[in-house]
Length: 123
Image (cartoon, rainbow, N blue to C red):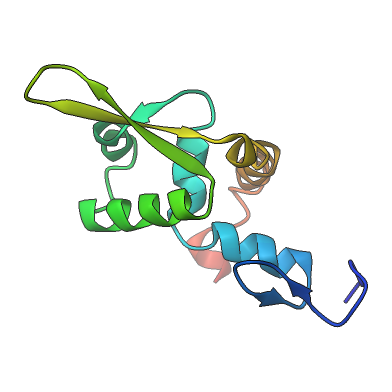
């Protein structure tokens, strides 16, 4: 493994990692966090819009991932008053969250370029 820092491990506020690749994957790991970030890359989006863009995610999972992404500093939520009785929450990337856009775009491009390689017959 290439050495990416001085010392045996990289220690952050979140955890201790053997390298920065592990740290990055820990922050955006799982089936949904990167997808949520990708859908927020261009504009603030409502909870309902996120559910519409990701029809196979459950509300419970979306709630949990939004909390984690907010706690990790990737996104911020802001209520926007529609009426006196109802408020719509908009989610947007923070400046820190925007730093992962090139990574997400690269992952999307790689997946598109290699989509035909991974067919059921290859497994």
